[in-house]
Image (cartoon, rainbow over all chains, first blue to last red; front, top):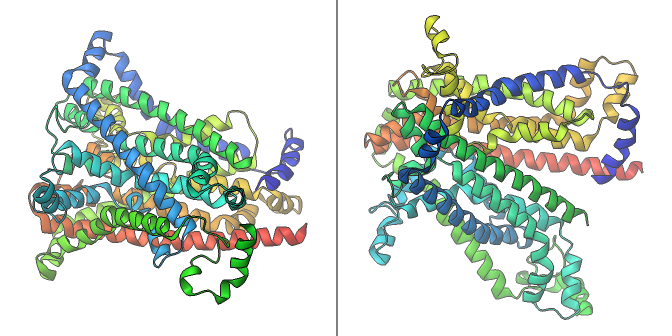
Amino acid sequence: MSAVSASAAPIKARGAPFRVMPGFKLSLGFTLFYLALIVLIPLSSVFLKTFTMTWDAFFHAVTSDRVMASYRLTFGASLIAALLNVVFGGILAWVLVRYKFPGKRIIDALVDLPFALPTAVAGITLTALYSSNGWFGQFIEGVLGIKVAFTPLGVVVALTFIGLPFVVRTVQPVLEDAEKELEEAAASLGANSLQTFTRVIFPTILPSLLTGFALAFARATGEYGSVIFIAGNMPMVSEITPLFIITKLEQYDYAGATAIAVVMLVVSFLLLLTINLLQAWTRGKGKK
Amino acid sequence: MSTHITAVANAEDALPKARRIEPNVGPVVLEPLWVRTVLITIALLFLTAFLIVPLVAVFAEAFKKGWEAYIAAIIDPDAISAIKLTLITAAIAVPLNLVFGVAASWCIAKFEFRGKSILLTLIDLPFSVSPVISGLIYVLMFGAQGWFGPWLQAHDIKILFAVPGIVLATIFITFPFVARELIPLMQSQGSEEEEAAIVLGASGWNTFRRVTLPNIKWGLLYGVILCNARAMGEFGAVSVVSGHIRGETNTMPLQVEILYNEYNFAAAFAVASLLALLALVTLALKAFIEWRLNESSADDSALRSTEH
């Protein structure tokens, strides 16, 4: 792929003043118009709306006890879910790339189920499974005495489901491209499996693991559909921030809802920035 | 050690099946068998608990009260109108984002210009915004207290809590899908073929139709399928702008929520099973297209290596 871009670059550079290819103005013009109309102008309304608030009102809206509790739950549960996905998604990616076993191709395709399955369907299904009389719930409650559905633990379950494909899909291609010769060399030089893993494999996949973690975390913080059914939505206990925004909207407190949305948006943008940097790092690692 | 490795590779045919676990990947698996077994078991257990059992559960719950109840739940007038609205929404949102995706990937992949990386980030933006906020922005634009609210009210145009709002929120949510698939694909293909066509006198439109489109058709289809799945399944954003008017502004996911909240579980899961079916079809098509894409890129690289 690098050979292609290298050979294409001189042509583009030479063609910069007058281009052979048609349609630049039309395609860029339409792209910018549609982007502004659908994304930029509507998104800017969130920030402009908060300018109508006084600083005190804004500060009060985004730091009330109830909203602070919702941040703790949203970010805490997202963190745990993303960490679970790093561990299990990492193992899953490894197994899918390195080993052969029956049904592997179907399993590989199924990994994307959380992307394809509507979140509301995931929500009611996980709730049915983990409630007191559900397939998993009756076992977990009966044997371990732990309630999952309608508690913060339920939020973690839903967010783990939603984030599952991210780590697998970011680590998988890196593992596929990883040079097995390096591992073989390490082994032939006398490294044991553990040393080969920590010294050779882990450094190679670390950027992609982090990218997958950040993607899963970012997705989890904004997630709504799959969580609201299983969470129980008790204020101060199991109410996530996106739900609190909806509660504010239903009370016609548009300014309050928007203020919290701004906080969430700023966090999302910071995460997006982090993810872009991580991806650049992953690509840099891949080239070496 | 290395001589041992080659010996294993050469003797592979003579080995019993268990040792020939992966002929493609390479001659060696460095980890001992028990590590492999443990890892595969963990991966499969995790996948079973988090993906396979929920998938089975959707259909088990849907058919709990038998076929008649299932059919009755689906041909219920409210469910039918929800299915219709979902189809209409996707039929508007997907083509619009398709046109945008083609335009965006054309200018980004075929031309160099300043601010390209900013444009790329902005295109991805809707993915990083919470669905709830995606709905909220249209409430702020078109709601009674919104920018255009008073004007819309004066002219008796309904956007919020009506079909246009649902369509707009869906377009926002599925905005990047097609562009995201096409941009890297078109970048990797370069523009030599198009340039040749143009130099030989083909018009821009003909070049696109005869040269570019055949090259990107699988990538295009891939993006469309993912876009469609999300458009039909979106819940959070649509929930904010819909107003939940039964038989009028309920999409299938919203209908699932309403039925569920009314404790009509069998009916909720019946409608949900249709969406789960859509997800399975999406995954199957996706796997098929990935296979086709790999084939064609393998053909491509074979061609390139014979050329050079």
